[in-house]
Length: 117
Image (cartoon, rainbow, N blue to C red; front, side, top):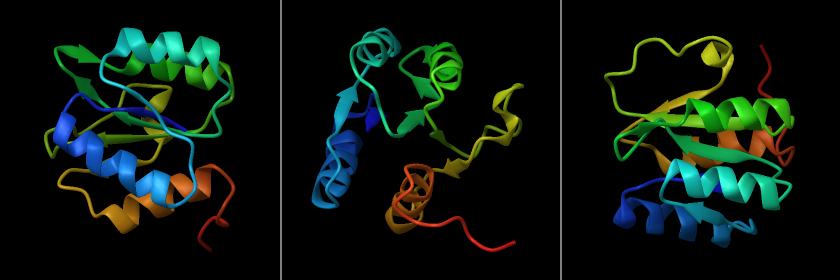
């Protein structure tokens, strides 16, 4: 799984959560590094902070979409609308509930079935 998060303390929490649940985690702290990782690995899922430093993660999201890698966005409460074609992607708002985040990633990676409508 690809984790894109620039906050070191928070990234460590997320990395530990997913490692504890059996994921192989590749953690990028910049969009550039995440794009490099996306060329080097075939990911089952990705967890993307929308604001990484001073950058937005949508270029990486475009690449993941092209490669058919499912992804979840994380963001603070100030994000109201996601740009197309990312407006249908799951968005988990910060502060995160770790169980909710884990469930969203597990659904995308095929470990859990999608919730019933």
